[in-house]
Length: 89
Image 1 (cartoon, rainbow, N blue to C red):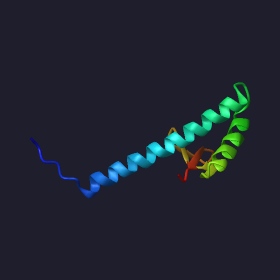
Image 2 (cartoon, rainbow, N blue to C red; image 1 turned 45 degrees about the horizontal axis):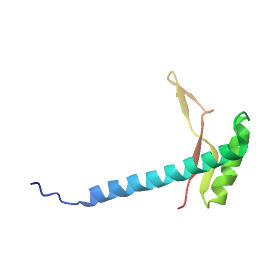
Image 3 (cartoon, rainbow, N blue to C red; image 1 turned 90 degrees about the vertical axis):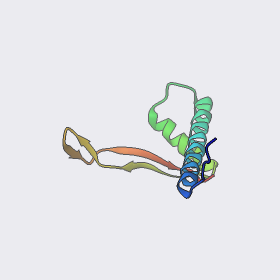
Image 4 (cartoon, rainbow, N blue to C red; image 1 turned 180 degrees about the vertical axis):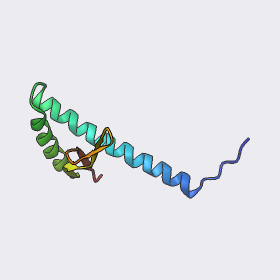
C-alpha cells in the first residue's frame, strides 16, 4: 500500500488538464455546430468567420489570426499565423 500525498504541483497539473479539456470541449463543440449548420465544401474563411460567431455566442473570448513568428529552415519569417481561442467557461 502506498501513501500518496496530494501536493500543490499535482493539484495545479490536474487543474491545468481540466482547463485544457474544458477549452477543447468548447472549441470542438463550436466547430461541430458550425459544420452542422454549413455543411462541407466552403472556403476556410467562411468557416473561420462562423466559428468566431459561434464562440462569441457561447461567451468565449478569442483572438483571430494572431501573428506568430515562423522559422523555416533556420530563417525567421513574419508570415506565420495561428488562431488562438480563449474560451471563458
